[in-house]
Length: 321
Image (cartoon, rainbow, N blue to C red; front, side):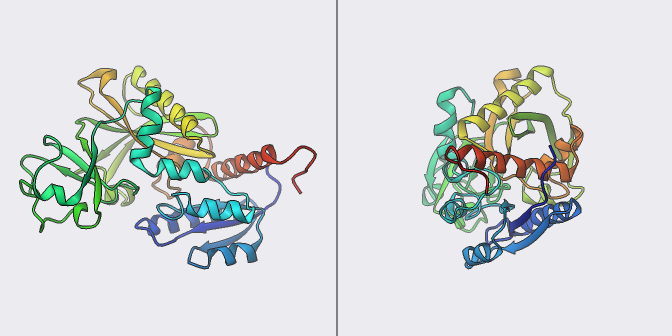
């Protein structure tokens, strides 16, 4: 069923490390909605975001923010208090999913395979390795591979890591250390209650870091991935299970690492992103397009779920307004 013509506030920008990506996502969403005949108010989030949203008084907010505070539950809690309808996941889900340690606590007991590891104080890294090399260090609540470092035996960080070596230990007091999983980078999008496809990401050099994700030509996207049917189905099943267990809404994207020498035992979910990018190079629009859903249809589908969720939560006898 087509959407009625709506007034949509597109919330973008903010002040996280992912601000440039959010601005690209938000502008793409805004143009798609205008092309469908909707009224759009663009809001570049600042400290006065509540006042801007109140003044706009939209029918629905499309949350195109990435990173804190737009993806960690802060903005979601504010919009809940304001009584606004918004896309993507709610406050509780956002708090859990952006925190890699909390995500493991929510998913691993339900049989979702994730890498082991532990939290470490950055100061500890200057004395000893927290895990046998190679291992991965990452901030607990950043996205888009911001601040990720792979520590290898032959790397130039030092042994132990030098205080002068550039890395996330200089920016964050605590980091998540995980064993490095050799193999292939896979990702699966979920829209509504449907897992789409599996994409393999092949960076031209290094690993799938921030630059590889958002610079045209640096990463090859194989969509659908050329992998065994068993691995494809496992990725889709795990992505959908994570989406449901975490309580995601609208869309999510789960990222995997697969050691293809180990078969199904080598597949691990790394994280579930509750507000995946909507840029020209982003993976959710790419998978949707491969499934026959163009970008404007994807945007409207995400909004439609937010509106349907609002109706479900209203008390009996109360209309949509």
